[in-house]
Image 1 (tube, rainbow, N blue to C red):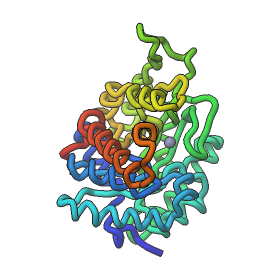
Image 2: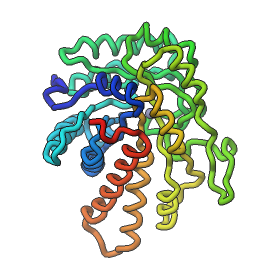
Image 3: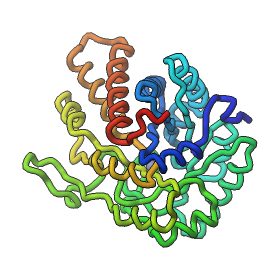
Image 4: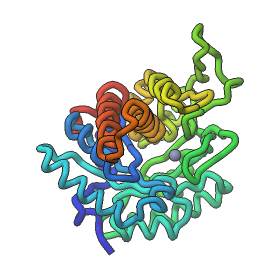
Length: 332
Ligand SMILES: [Zn+2]
């Protein structure tokens, strides 16, 4: 049993309070390996941004939960070594059972998500409440994120064919009954790099897909129902076209890629949305650079010379997100 405070981590409570008041969102970046962790910490130290290091169930399977936990501890020390201590949260992304959340809480996670959005409303309430009771009764309070409404798209083990927008009328009841600390809602964001089917989009003069706008009316209604309560957006990559083009130029194929425009995320970050999840954009940045190097330097076989430039690109991308999309730069 490890408490996250022993690892130098923080929960999301104070970070979200400040973010809601300050009109910005905390970045939640997924990580599975050392290079991703380094890029995230470099970018967030350089821009003085708080950060949520996110671990999906896929990441636990790929990298091992204990290794990830110790990498989070290493991240705290790494930030210190880089010269600026930023608040770092270790968060379970899309926990799908009480047992998994319990396991992560006992491992040293400072925050967990219990995703009961695939269950009936009452079952979602019961499961989320149970996780909150455990998390909140720890010596060091662990924060819990719940979800109401279903996002479309595919992300690791999470997938859904269709989205169901969050019903604003359910939010107060859900938060009151479960005592959840933050809530992921569905207003039109989507997991993965092909967030919408082409028939849901329009195309610009260059044939580039333009996605349907986010449902800010739902977000506003949620805020009206429960003012100042921390809201989370999943599936919020923008799928930069330059990375898609670079990947395709060097032999990849990513048909009909489309994401959420950055201006819309910036607008959302100014509201009660205080955590924005970004994973696909990081995958695209790394893959683009890896493909480029492998094609341009066919004699290269040192993984450091292949992953190093990918790491640099990822850092550049995340610095940009903190500064220009989330508004979290300078808030640590
Ligand atoms: Zn998600």
